[in-house]
Image 1: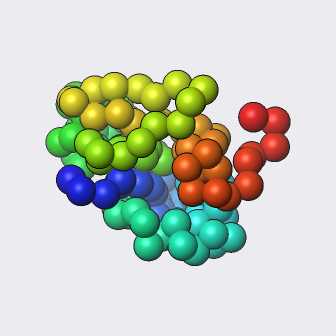
Image 2 (image 1 turned 90 degrees about the vertical axis):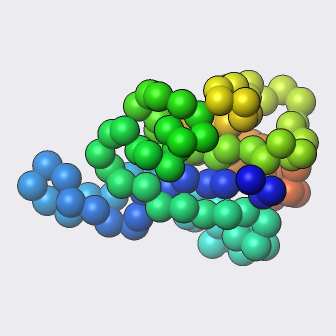
Length: 115
């Protein structure tokens, strides 16, 4: 893995007998829309709603991993003050707000309010 990988649910999926979307994923899609250069700096992979999410498990190991999740490439820097998680030899961020804080610190986007 040479670039950071963002694992995210698609804009709509079937769950609970209806079409739904993930509010945290929508938040990150909004950040990507406001700062399109981020899309060029990342690999973005869709994952399904059902657990386990194989592409994330392949990198981080077993578990019910969240989406969105940003998995950092080995050479990627970390921002001070952000609590990165570690699994499978990778640093990662398992929430939209942490991912947005990482983008702000390292890619120059605006900071999410309240963080």
